Amino acid sequence: MAPITRLYNRVMVRCPSIEESAGKPLAWVYNRAMAADDTLSTPPPGPSTPTVPETLSEEQAERMFAEMNEIIRAGEETRRLRTEMIRLLARSGWSQEKIAQLAGMSQPAVSKQVTKYKSDRSADTPPPTVDLSLDQNDTPWLEGRLWGLAEEISAAGPDSARCTRFLHAIARGRKRFTPQTVDELRRLVEDDLLRHRTELPGGYRAAYDRISRGLDVPAPVSPPGPTSSPAPVSPPGLVPTPGQPGTAATAPAPASVRRALARQVQRDHLRHSG
Image 1 (cartoon, rainbow, N blue to C red):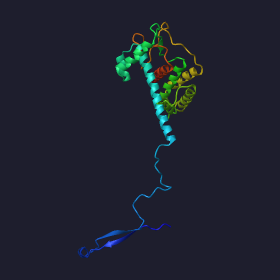
Image 2: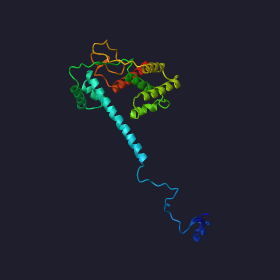
Image 3: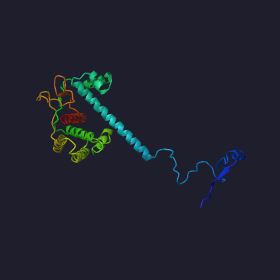
Image 4: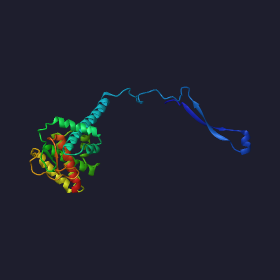
């Protein structure tokens, strides 16, 4: 049994002159007995006292760098996508002032991107058009539609939608669109549609069925040329080319651009169709 190192006793402080006038003791106070080895200092570190490490562990540093690299990589990919979108809109007849305003950039920065594109493209190669109609069957377009549908489901129930975490991973660059990740997103979207079928509009399920059929049996199509049939009307939220509604003149768009366009077209379609 450990020895008692502190002892407190209650004692009375007496003052005869005050007692005689007040008729009672002045006060009770406590005295303290302290052992010789008793101090107020912090005890030395022992088995139960954690020590502060002098530096990060290798695992901690690895996790921190991995998170930083994810954000940097996602930022680089987004910058490339923004560059392609600037060129697409410029080729569609948008003014550099308007593009700079919408993109939150300076006009010289926009002009630099447009000038670089013009110097890279042969003047003898007329740019084909990009179709903004919803029902297209190339894989990047269908992936973009699935992406947009998942975002609308997540927006309707951010705390309960299973696809929300996947969307966060896409935004941070932890996931990319591959056949495996697309299958994963399809499963999550289908599960959300099943669990929230009474809360989500019927158009969400119809859109998923159409996207799913297209992904199961993709039918590659070439972008329509300048002599193709009249272009469809542009969906709400996308500004058509001046003088040519519903199309945007561009070189064959990269998959990332078509995916991003389809994502926006799908989201606008769901929002306006209710």
